[in-house]
Amino acid sequence: MSSDGSVNAVIGGGPLNVARSIGRLGGDARFVSGVSSDAFGSFVRAALADSNVELALDTARGEPTTLAVVELNDLGPRYHFHLNETAAFALDERETTGAVHAMSHLAAMYFGTLGLLVEPMASLGEALIMNCASETLAVIDPNCRPSAVRDHDAYRSRVARLSARADVVKVSTEDLDYLYPGRTALEGGREILQLGATCVLITDGAAPVTAMTNEFEVSVAVAPTTIVDTVGAGDALVGGFMTWWTGHDLSSERLHEASLLEEAVSAAIEISRLTCQRAGAQPPRRDEVADLDGWRWL
Image 1 (cartoon, rainbow, N blue to C red):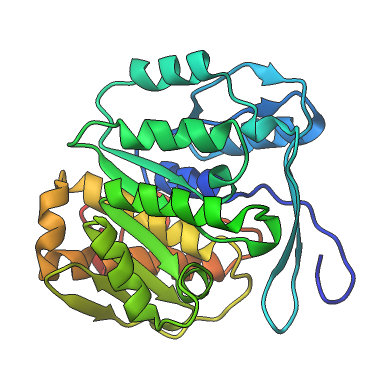
Image 2 (cartoon, rainbow, N blue to C red):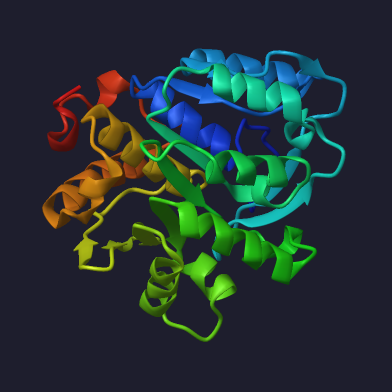
């Protein structure tokens, strides 16, 4: 919903945006989620196919599609959610676990956003991350939506448990304000590292992205960008980072190399910037970025 009162329906959601970013950049992306048999579900399937993303669970569900109403104004997006008894989160444990285990070796696994809140996906997703292979890059993005949280202590505890396993935790300064009230962003990032995370990526709108490990902090500038729509910008950054890291066949141990981490974040920022230049959380495709410095390897 725009400030002029117009209403536009777009495909979105953090995990879907991340998957589409990876698929469009040429990565092998598989999306684990329930998808409804309703009209919106058809749009979701078409969007995934258009972005070269495989739907891991291909059975159409009878529950309605999950909806987020986003109000766009000068203060930034404001979110309202329709979550309970919707298709995205209504996963069957046996079917989901079987689908994930049937995949060939996973270079990376992502879990985040509203999936951390709604059962049974929340518990099932947590179990998949906690039990994934040590060589699988575990990426967490809480992308906190306080208005959707019903049990704040339980939510923060889940984020903490996941952070302890994560190789990469991506958080915005707004996320850190919610998770660690009264702390600075850097203090919040250090708290996540103390939990056990290998690397924390902190975004702050147009300000530099900070990459932190227990050994160093790297600040990566964001070039000036003509903003059309910021929805999905953080998801595109995560998808870009995962594509770059796995595309170079890098292990989680190499997150401790400052120069390499800075290079990966710089490349990911370019994907986020391009996404902001178009409406509707539409990440760029491989042929659109192949001439950029961080993506010539494609």
